[in-house]
Image: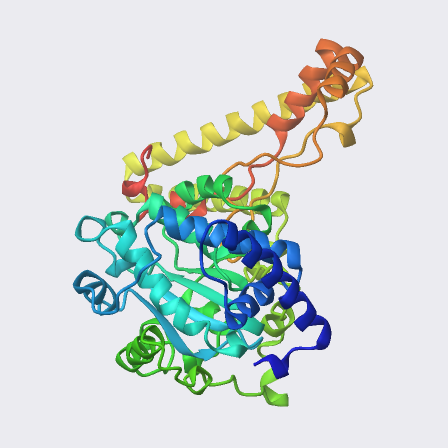
Length: 436
């Protein structure tokens, strides 16, 4: 393995070993092997200081969670890993990263412990990391939430897994793909961002089943995720056991490299291949093209047109049912009253604008991102960058005074909502709404 490293990389590995082994000698612990040092240096792109910090964070985490000794014959461990809750797929993504899959619906918190789950993860990830290509190209963590319930979700365990993978495990975590995340999951996951580093936040994405095949080759996904991969978990566990028993199997033989894309196929997956690279890890592009085309005002106008159309349809049906006619007339009157109030507020706002407050300086409503974008940035309000400092806010309030603040809030109130209510107003969805 050393032959695959450059002279500069070998020098970094030696520096890592000198520092770490000197520290372990003081603690009366054994020396770290060359192969182990390579894993930590690979994980931090041969930055010796970051690699050393990662090593000691890894050691601390293993001691805290009691993961130092993982017995492959442990009955509880065997029961955990045979559930296929967590596995490593035999393929790689287009950048060469290994694919680790956690299936949320198979996790039942009352039936296991955090220690056993983390042992199952470490037992299999340790085996995957025996592959040189995995060390070099990193790891993609797929969190499959298809058909999962709230009872399958363990908040504390999620924090531990994220913290382990990013800050305390010798693997390059390229990205985390959360598949079919339910609505109840998004709110607690927002809180998780407080416990992970900013760089990891930029690598966590939510995708649906159709989008997943844009980022991971279909032939390497199991059938439950829309792929063609036959079950290989039993064979994978045999390799893990050989690694645990130090039998030194050829782990690279388990991983099938991704096929080179043909010229004809490059067009259909151009957005995916553009957004996935080996080291830069840019954001996955927003695939909700329909929502990105419409502006807020266009959506608001479309909503008004739908409202007028509904009123018109009710009026046409009035000949059959007098009650329907009365209801339609009331709705039409209500709509006219709202339009009148809107025009009144517009005139009030125009009179207030004489105070000198420019419309460009007023706060704007932020358009929500679509479901295909980064889960940590959509639907739930989070603090934004670029705000005023305390001194700037005081100066601003003293400048615009009370009348200017009224103008700002009036402007916010006049803006169209960030989105539409078409789906919630649909007849078949009305009974589902809290306030019909």
